[in-house]
Amino acid sequence: MLSLAFYSFLAFGMSLTASAASSDSGYVGYNLTLEGDEDSVIYSTDNTRQNASATYPDPDVFLNASLSVETIEIEVDNLTAKVNLDLQVLELLQFNAGVDLSIERVHLLIQDVKAKVLLEARLENLVQMVDDVLGSLDLNPIIATLGQGVGDIVGETTDA
Image 1 (cartoon, rainbow, N blue to C red):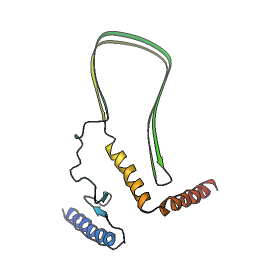
Image 2 (cartoon, rainbow, N blue to C red):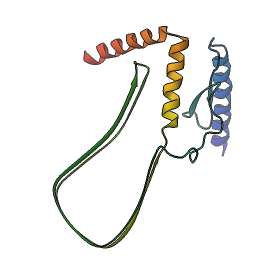
Image 3 (cartoon, rainbow, N blue to C red):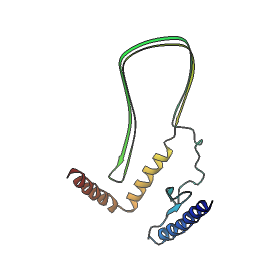
Image 4 (cartoon, one colour):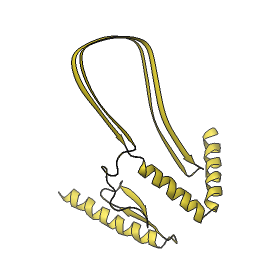
């Protein structure tokens, strides 16, 4: 119980320190706050929505499939499926998400199966991140050249 109180106090103290540091950083409209445990860092701007929800707005990708099968018999020698999302804005923002599936030689007999698949994907946060990066570049064009330099340094370091 004492350790929980100590971590709460520590997180509160770190929140005050981070907020004070960010207000003196010289940037207008940017705020760094720590909420919850010390690994939870939330970056926000003046235009960040405070009422973000996991159920609103409607998902950009929605898959709802139900399956009821009496008998299936499948023979598959080789099946490959790839889905990949790769997004990059200069050297400042990089986002990768993907699925890779490969099956080779399967014989399968399925009887009396009921299944349901539900997939929802909301890309609004990704769009907001890109918008924030582009807005920062618009206000501070030098960031684009600074990002290139960091990429070159990292590339040289990893190539060595």
